[in-house]
Amino acid sequence: MIKRFFVLSGLCMFLGLTAQKTHTVIKGDTPYNISKKYGITVDELLKWNPKVKDGKLAIGDVITVKTGTANAVATKAPAANTSSQTGKIILQPKQTVYGITKQYRISETELRKLNPELDSHMKIGDEITLPLDSIKKYGGNQAVATTVTKPMETITETAPVNNSKTKMDSGNERSSAGNSHSNQDEYATYTVEQGDTVFSIVNKFGISIDELVALNPELSKGLKAGMVIKIRKLDAAYIKKNGDALSVVLMLPFGYNTGETQYRAMATDFLTGAKLAIERNASSGQKLDIKIVDSGNEASFKSSLSQINPNNTDLIIGPFFKSNVIDLLDFTKTQKIPVVAPFANSPELYNYSNLIIVETNDQTYADKISEEVKSVYSNQKIYIVADTKKENANYLKSSLEKNLKNAQITVVNAASEIQLDQNMMTGQSAPVIAILASDNDAVGEAFSNKVIALSKEVQGIKAFSMYAVPSFDKKVDELSQANLVYLMDRKINADGNFEKEILAAYKSKYCKTPGKYAVIGFDVVNDMLTRENKKGEIFKQINKVQTQLATKFEFVKSKSNGAYVNTGFRVIRLVP
Image (cartoon, rainbow, N blue to C red; front, side, top):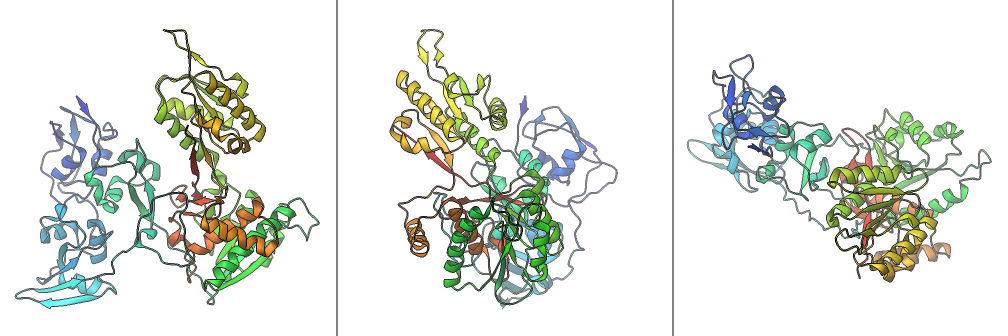
C-alpha cells in the first residue's frame, strides 16, 4: 500500500553512513526518518531516488541511501569549537537550529552533542548550550548577562521580545505613519493554502526542503492551511544615502512638455490624492522631500529621466505604463531604488526585485473564485460568462477542471445562454453555478438579471463574479437569493471612521468628493509612505497587510528575487 507523507524535517545529524548503500522500505518509514538514520539530508535522499515523488514510499521499495564516499554531512560547516567552556543562550522567537549554527559558527554535530534533546528542545525561552567562545564572539550587540559556575562558565544571552501582534484580515487593517517592524519582515513569507504540500511549496519557490524546514521548525507538527511560513531571507533592503528627509519622486503623465493631454486628467486626479497622503504623513513627523516629474507620454518618457538623480532618490512612484516602468528600472538598476508601479502588471516585470506592483492581476481573482466554487460544488453544471477576449474565462475553466472531478463547465458569450439543469430522476429543474468573468458593466447587468430570474425559478442557484459591477450594489436583495460571492477592490467603506476622516479632509481641501484616480493616488502613496522608515527600508515592512481608503495591499514575491505583486482583494458575500 502506498502512503503519502509530508517531509517534516531536514535538520539531519552529521552521522557517518553505514556500509549499506540501499535501504528496503518497511512499515512506518518516511523520507525524513530514513535520511536521519543514514545521516543524509532529505534533499540528498530525493536526489538519489527520483522515483520517490511527493514523498510517497511503498513498503518493499529499495532506495539508495549512499553514493560514493563512506561519510556524508548535511551541509558544510566550520570546524568544531574545541573550547571546554560552555555557556547558554535563551532561545528567541524565529531562531532555528540552522540559524544558530550559522550565527555561532559551529557545526550541527557539535550543537547536537552539546544539546542531546535538541529536537524537542526548541521552545522560546529554552536554554541552548554553546561553546563560550562562540557566544562571546558571535553573540552580537544583544544584552548579555554573565554568571560563573565551576568548572564551567555560563553566559545567558537575552534579546528584545518580539511584541508584534497578529491581526485577522478583516479588510480594514490599518497602519500608522510609524515605522516599527518585526523580525518577520526580514523574510519572504507564504500563507499555506488548502492542498499545499511541502513538495509543491518548495517547487513553487525554487528552494530545497532542508532550507524550508530550517526556517520553519514548526513543520515537524505538520503542514496546515492558514500557516504563515518563511520562504527565504529577503534581499538586503535599499538604504538611503543622503540627508535626513526621504527623497520621493512622483512620475505622472501630464504631457505638458509634449502637448499630450490624453492622460492629464488622470494624472492630475492622482496627484490630488497623493498630496493628501503626503501631507498626512508629514504632519505625523515624517521628513519628506517630494519631487514631481512630468513623464510625458510613452514616446517621450526617456527624456524625463534626466530630471531624476538616481544617487539621491529613495523611492519612485510611477510611471503608469509598462514600457516606461521597464525604462525606469533599467535606468535605476545600479542603485536598486524601490519603484512602485500603480497600474502596470505584466509577467515581463516580475524579474525586477526592486519593483512593487500595485495592480492585482486577473489570475489572482480567478484563483480565488475557483477556490470559492470548489467549496460549494456538488455536481452542478457550471456556466462561465466570458468577455470578448475569453482569457479569464478559459483560465478559470482550466482551474476548475483541475479541482473538480468530472465537472460540466461551459464558457458562454452572454448570460442569456445560462440554462437550468434537469434532474434525470425527477425531470425537475435543477440549480446551476453561474460565474461572471468580465468586468464590463453591461455584461454585469445582464448577468445580474439572469441570475435573479433563475433564482426565482429554483432554489440553490450559486453565483460568483471575479469583479464588482454597479448592478451588484443596486440589486443586493435579489442577488442574495443566489448567494452571490464577488471580489472587489477600490471601493470605499463610507461607514468606516478612517474613510470618513480621509473623505472629509479631501472635500475640505478640494471642495469635492475624490474621483477614482484620486482614491488610487491617496492609497498608493499613503501605503508606501507608511511602510518606509528613516533609512528608506521600505521592503522591511512590505509583507504587512494594509487596507487604505479603498485598496487592500497584500504583497507577495512573484518569484525568487522577483518583484513584489499585490494580491489583495476583498470578498463580498450576499446571503438571503
